[in-house]
Length: 165
Image 1 (tube, rainbow, N blue to C red):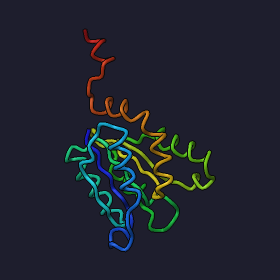
Image 2: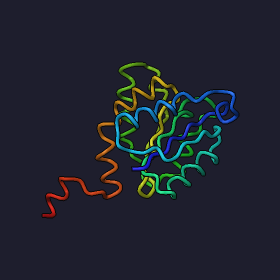
Image 3: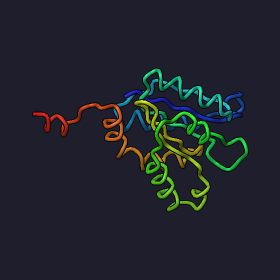
Image 4: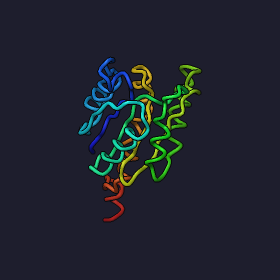
């Protein structure tokens, strides 16, 4: 499975701020999954820039794209809008589960506008920009991602192989 990590940050894109959530995602994926991070980028909080990067990575065969940042109430937080413009099918259960678990930690989780969805054979999930929240969200996601990606990419697993015998 190929993974893309897209950080959305005006200051990060200008080099004025060091991205901390992207490296955390790389570390988590390297240490807890067999997947390879094949794409990484930082783009400004601009809907077209976000959408164009998501589309390019989907077309390049990335199976999972994790975005970080741009999901709140600030006027320039447009990651959910860019994601909705790109996806073909929304996966509301993922975003709902992330918010539900995050609400156990902070009431601010209800301010998240993050979405998740599918474009072709790519799963796109919006995560918060906070490094702490990224870690917490990945703890929720990691148990379901292998099965979700197997279903999405039609990759055979041991159960489906057993049924075909």
